Image 1 (tube, rainbow, N blue to C red):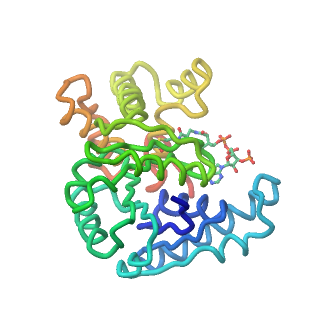
Image 2: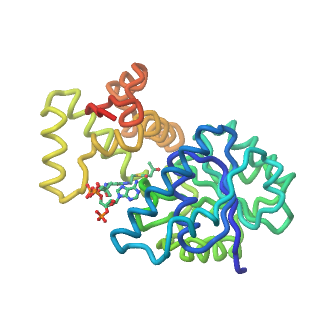
Image 3: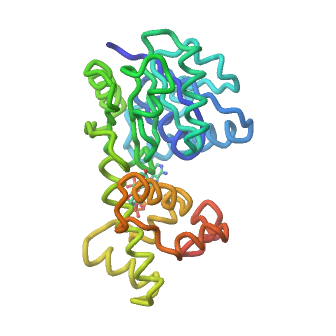
Length: 284
Ligand code: CAA
């Protein structure tokens, strides 16, 4: 199945990154985002990012204008009726995603695949909210989307082989490397990454070393581009806590219990880069 148009729900950090790579790779992109300020900020960020990519000779497009022309920004869900393939990148809340999938199922044509960029909500449960569970799939990108190579293609219990194949093809068309994984809590990457981040917070809480030292050790000692605490700030501490709670609840193993300090940071509204304060301080 040749996909030419994608519809993206949400223009937050992930939605706008997905929109950028889709448009850069020649797809026609419709972004549905209710907030006017988010739509404006997303379009500006994509324009700046593409211009930078062109200046550095990293993108095979002639101008940012060419990419921006492939993007349509709209407010109303009803526009999803024209979709060929949907990638939902709304806020990470199951009740909201279930409602969106129910609406998409009503609005979209019967052959349309409904993908979700969820980082940890069960694809099988989202699929069960629709009458097309075989056409519901996870398409999990990594932050920052324009830079990170992989996409996890998450196969729900009822996802068909044809859906997985079409989603893989789309991810590759967007310049990504696709990896099919099972619909297991945290999928593959977050199953491994969140325990690392949580353990780093335990080490901080227990005074093993300060945040900068712990991060420097992991960067230099394991060649990670970022230390786990800086990475947690990039992802968002609320998101890290949410995913860790999913691992704890759904796998039922106490080894996944969230560190009390992580819980307190979220209670305090110190969510990382997006609030200017997390394990580190951010000026802008
Ligand atoms: N958009 C576009 N390009 C970006 C970018 C963005 N948001 N952020 C960085 N870049 C580009 C920069 O322009 C730069 O390009 P050049 O090589 O042409 O200069 C390149 O990426 C490297 O960036 P920087 O020089 O600014 O900084 P860096 O070398 O420290 O790299 C980083 C920054 C790419 C973010 C790197 O630190 C890194 O890879 N960190 C780990 C990120 C990671 O692990 N992400 C996954 C998080 S988990 C997740 O997302 C899933 C989930 O469900 C929680």
